[in-house]
Structures are given as C-alpha cells and as structure tokens.
Length: 308
Image 1 (cartoon, rainbow, N blue to C red):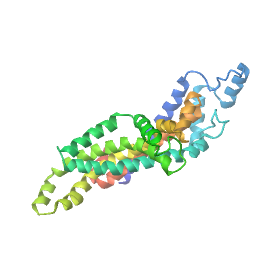
Image 2: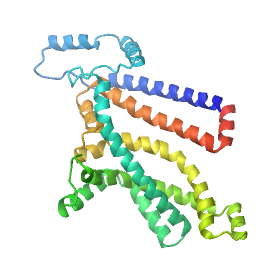
Image 3: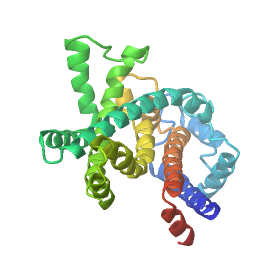
Image 4: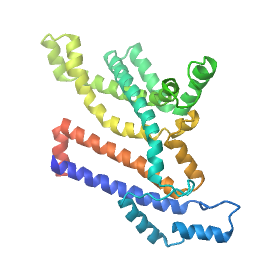
C-alpha cells in the first residue's frame, strides 16, 4: 500500500508541475500587457514592468516564480494594488466551495436514488424517463438552467432571489443550476452499474436462497453498484467547486469565479496563474484521493498499481 501511495503522489507532483509550467508559459503568449491604461506614459509602463520583474528574461521570471511558489508566495495581484494572490483567493474561495459542495451533495444524493430506481425498472417508463433526463442534464449547459430558473422561480413566481448570496433562499437557484448536471451524470452512471450488478451470478444465487428483494437490493446490489461511483465523485466534486465560474457571474455570487474573469480581462498574470493552479491542484488532489480510496476498496487495483 505504501508503494502504491508514493507512486500516486509522484504522479500528482509531476502533473501539478506540468500545469504550473504550461500556465506560466501561456501567460507570456497573451496579447497586450497588464498596464494598458492610457493615462500611463511609456516611462511609467517601463517602471512598472521593472518593478514586477516583467522586463527580465522569461527563464529568469520562471525560476523566480517557481522559487517563490515553493515558499507559498503566488505573487501580488496587478489589479488589486499588489495584494497577495493567496490572500485574495482564500477570501473568495470559501463562497465558491460552499456553492460547489451544496450542489455536489444535492446532485449526488438524488442522482444515486434516481439511478437505483431506473436500474430496478429497466426498460420501463421510469428507466426511460431517467435516461432522457440524464442526457438532457449532461448536454444542456448549467447557465441555460440558471436562466430558466431565474425567470420562472425568481421573476415570474418570485419564490427565490434572482441574484446574490445573502441567505439560504439565495442559495436555492444557483445550487440547483449546478446540481442538475451532477444529478444527471451520477444517475446515468448509477443506473448502468445497477443493471450490471443485478445480472451478476451472486444476485441470482441470493434470489435462489430465498432472500427478500429488499435485502438483495440493499445488501448486495446497491452496495456493489456504489463502488464504481466513487471513481467519478472525486473529479466531479473538484470540477463543480472550481467550475462554478459562469453560475457565479449569472447570480452575482462573490466567489472566485468573478475574480478569475476580471483577472483575465485585465491580464493580471499572478491572479490568473494562482487561480488556475488552485483549480488544478484541487482536481489533481481529488483524483489522488479517489485512487487511494479505490485501492482500499479493491485490493486488486492496489497490487497492480504497485507493480506497474
């Protein structure tokens, strides 16, 4: 197990390093500069570039950035008066995390329930309905659901606030908008696993022994079908937490998403790199956790992974 964990840690570190490098280099390819204010003279722009070290060779900037990053310094934001990027991210990230976690919990719970129902009624109306809903939920972007919910439940019926993040009622619309995609994906995956598990030999054996349908479904079918679902929940959680950028903009939520958009439009290199690295780090970490959990659940994966 120790070798398996160390190997996964090694993959995680290499992947994160590649992300950092590609992000840094891509910043150098962006058109324009962070100092496109018409009020600034060429002399002032050159002074600012010197102050932030942007007049140095790219290789020197890269080495300095890596060195500072190793010491927990992501640099200072150009658009926020050189305030620490780490401080700005930590101030906004909790809001995005709350939104993402609420959506993932809601979507996972109802997705599993819907998938179980569809799997147990294969080929029937409930199954077809789940399949149609899942395909639509995965295919239609979350901002479409957000606009529909805002109009009908926020403007037309006026049950919930159209925008903001000021209380439980203001969470409803953005959380549902994000949760639909999660629900659809989990339901589709759970339904597939349930259909596969129900046809296994041990389920037939359990039925032959006279176990009740409820006992077979709960003790054998659901438990075994849930194991593969673990593989998608980790990356899905990270993707939702970090991928709520559009939803935050639509609902005016003061999370990291709006800050990220602003940093891109102003060429705020340190903020763009810091946010991208945070997103990538969470995603890579989630995959690492899933690998470890899956290795614990299924020792065959741990053994094969250790020998690979």
